[in-house]
Each structure stands twice: as structure tokens, then as C-alpha cells.
Amino acid sequence: MRAVINAFLSRAACAFVAVAMFALSPAFATIIERVISPGGIEAWLVREPSIPLIAVDFAFRGGGSQDPAGKAGVASLTASLLDEGAGDLDAKTFQQRLEEKAIDLGFSVTRDYVSGSLKTLTENKNDAFELLRLALASPRFDAEAIERARNQTLASLRRQTTSPNDIASLRWWATAFAGHPYGQPTRGTLESVPVISADDIKNYARRVFARDTLTIAIVGNIDAAEASAMLDRVFGALPAKAELAPVAPASPQGLGQRVDVDLDVPQSVVMVGGAGIARKDPDFMAAYIVNHILGGGSFSSRLYREVREVRGLAYSVYSALVPLDHAALFMSGTATRADRTGQTLEVLINEIERLAVSGATENEFAKAKSYLKGSYALRFDTSTKIASQLVAIQLDDLGIDYIDKRNSLIDAVTLADVQRVAKRLLSGGLLVTVVGRGQAVTPKGERG
Image (cartoon, rainbow, N blue to C red):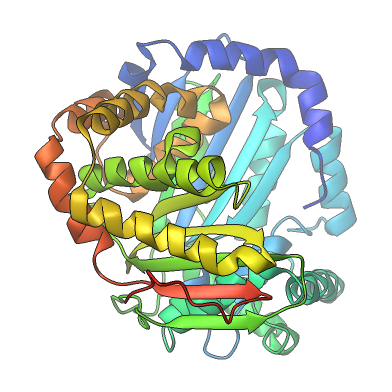
């Protein structure tokens, strides 16, 4: 997608400020409406008539996990082409229409979803909805556009071959999910992208873009009646049922192994990961607190303190829960000077082990809960963030009242829960990937 964001922001910056004020209102969560169109398409709607903007976020289940065998990157290439011409509009004309009306339209792909977002001024909503309809229902997939997108993808993939962060991620996923769709890179490979055909792209769109796997959120100056009509207009022509290939449940493999990749760069990248806890698991909220204490809490986390502040080994370090549709992961990583790779990895793994064995302190527990509750409003400080969060809540099947009850779920977690779940989450073994120089140093604390 060619950038039209600047044009959009230049006309709507003041409105975004107003959206932020609205979103932080304590009452906003009570005005989420469930809208069902005459055609049976459902969306969650947050209305704010004082804001001259409309944001629409949506997602189709499928993502990169639906790429055909040997053709990783089909989903990504398909998504990149949806705004490159549709209906009787070629790529140039389609992009001109977006820019003339300051419409921001974009698509992205993860392992599990193809997502889209539309942002428009209310005065241009009809044009915006029509362009979105055309992109989804009548994409052209012209040969020239396909080759341009293919060449852009290949250029990006070539750059990844010298990026330690990209190499570490690709090798970790390929090892952890060998033989599973999650092991294939979402953007494809230098071998797979050249053999993707126009038919592959068209078949992917036909199989995946369907109403039964569609999740939608709408935020802004639009009422329920208009939203209902828009749903049928934009999405109504899509197939009723997707044709998704089954994806088997999976767990990360290779735990206890270390994969070294030699690359002559000043900094080595360290990436570790293991089995996580699923989003619908009763222990997820306790695991969320554990992760915050370990490495999800930025300046307050144990990893930040021990790796950066105490030893000065890295500028940043993280840990994260990664709940996917067919697997659940715990991941952590950092980048450090090549000659300090072994020490950094030792500290990282020792901190993970220490939290698993000894658990959190009462002070860490209280601070984590307070931060996680207080910072939640920051996920709703713009209309686009609200729409994104509403889609995520629907995809996770957490219920339309989740925003209201979420902090009470955190309050219900006890310190004993955190101690128990820390052991469950962090004691299952880790797959380690190190990219850079100096990998021969094996930390004393490394374990499986």
C-alpha cells in the first residue's frame, strides 16, 4: 500500500486528539454495541458522533498457516495486492482514489489471520466503504501488480539474510515447528516466492476471505443502522463459508537445544522460547503477571534490571507470551556485544530459572498488578486502537463485557497462583537461537 497516512493525518489530527479524550472516558466500555446486519454479519460498534472519523478493523482466520505446501508467502503476497487495483480500477487509479479522499486502507498477515484496517473521515465514508468492498470482493491481481509485489518481497527477503534479528526469528520458528505451517516464514522464502502463481493468489483469496471466519469492529461517527447497512454492502458478497485446510495443534520442538548461526556483525542476537499458556487457559492471567515481572514490564522487569542496569549487557531485553490459534509460546530475547554473548545468555536463562524456582516477591506481585490494571486504558486512546482491541477480544472469544471485567480478573490472581504458574510456564525447557559471533561460549546456566 502506498502511504496516504500523512494526508489523512493532516486533515484529521485534531479529531484524533478528541478520540483520545473520548476513549479514556471511564464509561466508554459500556457503549460497545453488537450490530448484526440483515445478512447476518456481526460487528462490535463504539459510537462517538462528535468525532468526524470512522475506523473499521477486521480479520479473517487463516493467515500464513493456509499457504499451500512449498509456497510460503502466498497469504502475504495476496494481502499486499488487495489495494493494488480492484473492480474496474487499476492500481494507480485505486491508489489515487484513496489519496484524494485521505482514506487509509491497509492489510497485514500473521500466522493465523489476514487483517485489514480502514480509516476515513466521515464525509468520505461512502467512497471508503466502496473501495474496501472492491478490494475484498473484486481484487484484480493484475500481472504487473503481482510482479511488482513479488519483487518488493524478494528485495525484503534478501535484506533479511543479513539481519541477525530476522535470522534468529526464522531459525527459531523453523526449528520449533519443523513440518508444521507455523514453521514456514509468513513472508515466504527466496525459493518459494518466485514460484507463487496468479492462480495461487486467487485461490487463496477465494478460500480464506469468507463471512464465517470474519471478525469486525467499527469505531467513530456512525450509528448502528448505518453500520448494519455498511456490513452487508462491504462484506455481503463474500462467500458464506471459508475453505480452510485443517491446522494441527502443535507444541514447540527442540527444547533444550541451541542453534548457532555465524554472522559477522557487531552484536549477537539471542532468542529463546518454549511452551506457553493458551489464551483461554484459566492460568493465563497469572502467566500474564509472571511475564510482566520477568521481562514484559520494561524498566521494572527482572531481565531489564539484571541484563541492562546491573551488568550493562544490552540496551533492551524482553519476554512475551505468544498465544496462537494452534500453539502457545513463551519467548524472550535480546541483542548484545558479540564477546558478551555467553554471559548475556547465562544471565537471561538464570533469571528465567530463578523465577520458576523461587517465584515472585510480594512487592513485585503488587506492582505488576497495579501497572497492568492502570495501563490498560492506554490501549484505547485512539479510535484505531479501540477498533484493534475489539477485534482481538472477539478473536480470543473473551466476551463483549471483557473490558469491564478484565481488571477484576487480574485482582482475582493470588500470589500463590503466580508462584505455581511461574513454575508451570518457565520450567518446560527452552530452544535457544544465537546469531552473530562468539557463539562458542556456552553459559553455565543453560539447561533444557
